Length: 226
Image (tube, rainbow, N blue to C red; front, top):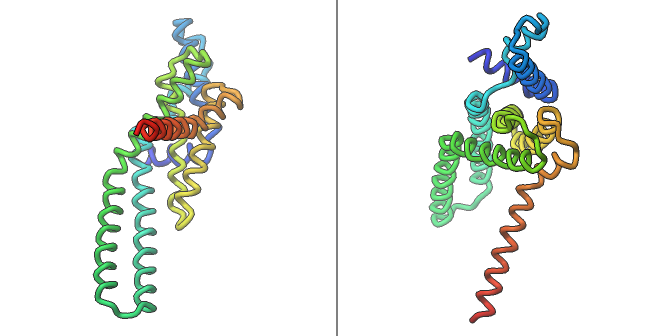
């Protein structure tokens, strides 16, 4: 577990180096496979094949979950501190107290559900990005093992969950950094140019706008037919 955590933190601190090493190791393996002679590989290159670089999708999920749980403690402490502050200034009102109890119960259930079902969210969100990268890789004719490369890029980009240990602004920093890491991973690991990587990053926004347009168009057509 310590090795996984160490690789996770290194991938977070050195995202570009990690993606480049993953690419170099893949190219070296392809070279060995094509030549079918391990003797041709230099000693320093063979050590690159042996050492662990970055994290897998499952390893990224597990360690990210730990940082999300740590962030959850900050959020819960802040919520109850704010609740106590509100109580000290609020007037006594039975209806208000009842609403407060209901809201607190709802918030706690939602909060715990978010922590418990984080692996499912991580898996769905990760696979979403992996499939987007695979589509654009085919579109831009990247004829390599795009399934494996896409997973490498996403898994190591999600090490940005480390930033969630920062109170208050941690989740915002994670989301921004996650997109930056994805952009860098596309360039360093899959050799996308700036335009190609930028199109991948804004693809979810384009999909959302397209879905919104189609929904508004459907509503408009239904309204005009009444």
